[in-house]
Length: 285
Image 1 (cartoon, helix red, strand yellow):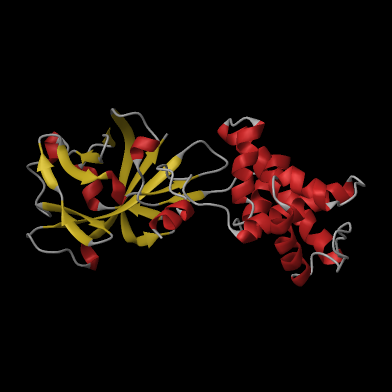
Image 2 (cartoon, rainbow, N blue to C red):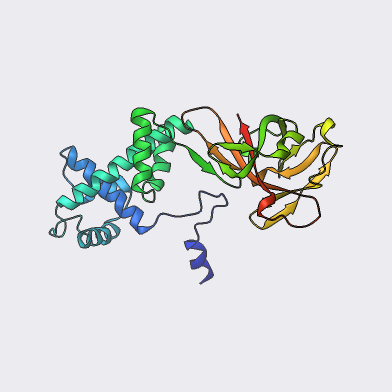
């Protein structure tokens, strides 16, 4: 029993390689192949399908029954050539377009060779939504880009491990159009330092030397994570805030990324109320 379980286990030790193909994926792969052969004017021969997909006739027979029930194939005599229905041709065309769009997209954006791009496309084409495929298609044809939003960012995946300096501003939350700088913004340097580390990355918000004696409105800086408010540690380099609080918005038309996070200032060591909340805004390159 244990040996049977292990034989069904698709675990290979690497994320992205542990999920075996589902029956739906295999069925749609067969549909795509049949459609491509139909467009080329080739016979939809069962033995040829088995040879192309390295599948035995018994297994193919199971999928033919399923595809007939789903309306992709017409009822055909046992052993005869397969015949696509109009619905099968329509869905096969969609499978073909998905496969080609993803294969092309993976090559021009990820630098994969054709074989590796096709391997990835064979898995992705079955689960991506129609609007995701449409976005890829428009990118390939016109280079059309869109804004993207990323939360809980792993900065190690974006920058080599070292320190960076970016421009920052602190805004009031009650004034959005146009945005208005918060009073506390004048107390800080315009540059925020991002320290990218292997396991975590932090931001250092440093008070201006001349503003330190004048800071009477607040003694504590807080930052908001998914689990609530946390008090920032004040170090010689400034207030230390985890970079993960930032939500990044990448602009598809211009080469900059905007990071936004929720912070607050209090005079006492108490959780901030709504009036104490501010928006930390950072422009990253």
